Every structure is written in C-alpha cells, then in structure tokens.
Image (cartoon, rainbow, N blue to C red):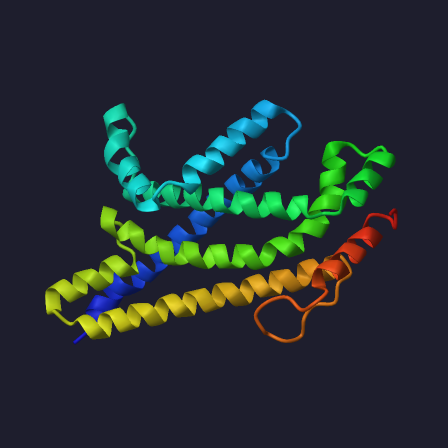
Length: 246
C-alpha cells in the first residue's frame, strides 16, 4: 500500500517538479513561438530562411531523443546541463517550434485590408503588429495554444527517463519497490487529468478576456470549439479596435 511517507517524500515533491517543468518549458516555448513565428513573416529572406529552418528541424525531431542528446552528448562539448534544465530545454525548443506555426498562421489570417490600413496611417511595422495584427490574432491563438500546453504537460513525463524526479519518476519508483502497478498508474492518470483540466480552465478564462478585448462577446457555454461566425465577429471587432479603418 502507498504510505504517507512515500507521498510526502517522493510523490508530492514529484507533482511540484512536474508543475515546474511545465511552467519553465511553457515560458521557453512561448518565447520561441513568438520569436520564430514573427521571424517567419519577416521581409528579410535570410531571417525567414533561418526561422523556417528552425521550424522544420525541431518539428521533425523527437523530444525524447533531443533530451537524451542534451543530457548525454552536450557534456562531450564541455557543456553540462542539470537533468531538469536538459528536459526543460528539449521540451521548450520542440513545442516552441509547433507554437511558431500557430503564431504565423494566426497573424497571416488577419485581413489584408487591416494591414493596409496601418500602412495608410503611416504606422511602423511594430505599431501595426502591436495595435492591429496581434489584438486580432491573439484570440485565435488561444484554443490551439491550450491544446499545445496540455500536450506539453503530458510530455513532461519524458523527463523521468533522465532521472528528473517528477511524479512519473516517483510513481515508477514506487511500483518497482512494491510491485503495485494498477493503483499508482491510476493515480498518475487522474493527476495528469486534473492538471490538464486546471490548465484548460485558465486558458479559457484568458481566451474570454482576449475576445472581450477586441469587442467580441465571450462564449457563455463551456463547450468545445468556437461557435459559427466567431472569426467574422473577431475581424469586425478588430476593425473597430484599429480605428474603424477598412
């Protein structure tokens, strides 16, 4: 049976490690997502080429193999990473590549007329991005980012293979010591679901606020997916936020 000592010594600290890995990798992944996503829309071909190469390379890599490489191969080049940071780096760089496509696609979906209106108003590229494009694209990014963040949470289980003591590592340790498989893996499934549910609630709250920020009425129901016409509404709202220029 699972003792209270096991919970306080291994399992609860393991849950906290899982939360930390998710948070740190999400911050790194967000920075990569916006950096690479914006760079892929640059006017300079060399910037687009480098950003596109990053996207293709890291999208095609296995996060687990990259984690092994960072943990076992980097020391051969004189750079030793702690297991936690090797896991965070591999997950953040990999999922950041996926997120960059969300950013690029959402910005590309902003109507051309809105971008041309910014040019007509003599806005700089940064002003057009900050005042016109991002406010309209941000609500569209939230649902796919929510899915990506949940995938990242589940992907944190990979860090257990490089001796990071997350809750999967603690669960495997307990199973090896007691040979009780069903209870511990059932508990792990429930905990991952609970953490994913909390993330979903938080992201939907941010999505409602983002939609309200561009004048779109937030959905009252908790159903999955956008209601019909949501994109058209957000475009009209974005037009108003850009000063009503069409």
